[in-house]
Length: 231
Image 1 (spheres, rainbow, N blue to C red):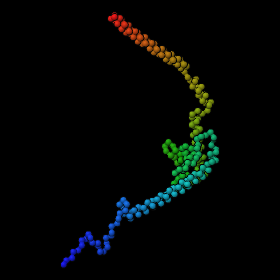
Image 2 (image 1 turned 135 degrees about the vertical axis):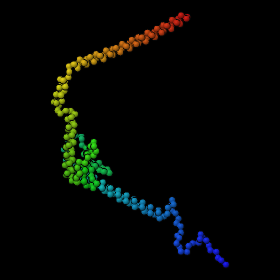
Image 3 (image 1 turned 30 degrees about the vertical axis):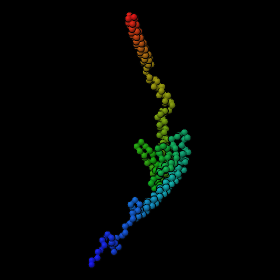
Image 4 (image 1 turned 60 degrees about the horizontal axis):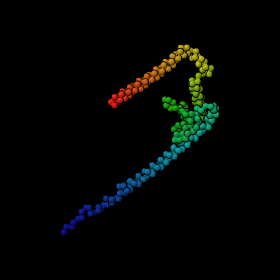
């Protein structure tokens, strides 16, 4: 009598090579995938916190170096005349701290947070005047920068008002002496011509008004005569 063997679907393998199926986790991900993703996220958070901490330490080091330079520049600030409002020394904290000398010149730190860089904004872009890690050298460079800016200011003022008041008065007298005498006569003729033009325009307006009212009166007289004749 022949015995029937059960089909392969209903029989488990004897060697145990096939593992039991793993129940999927949320969103169809296996638990191993979820565990590795959580671990990766935790590592990313740690790396980001370390990076932010390093950036904060670097920023604090840059601010400290700029404050040291600002204290060294105090004697220079006291020597600037009080009536000169060209300069505005001030430390601006931020992601990249800067020590401003004026609106277009400032000092910032290099990538190593030890090297000073004096930079000026020009019409052609930013220009690095000097780079140095020495505070006395940067004070000397800042002093030269302030001196050049004061000289440019004096030249601009001289170009606006002239070299001296005496020269300005002399120039006015020379221009008055070189003025032609005919200019007064030409001015009178121009004013007379303008007045005549206005009078002629007024006359034309008056004649036009007289003609208009004349035509209107004639038309009214014609209508009155026409209706009076019919009556």
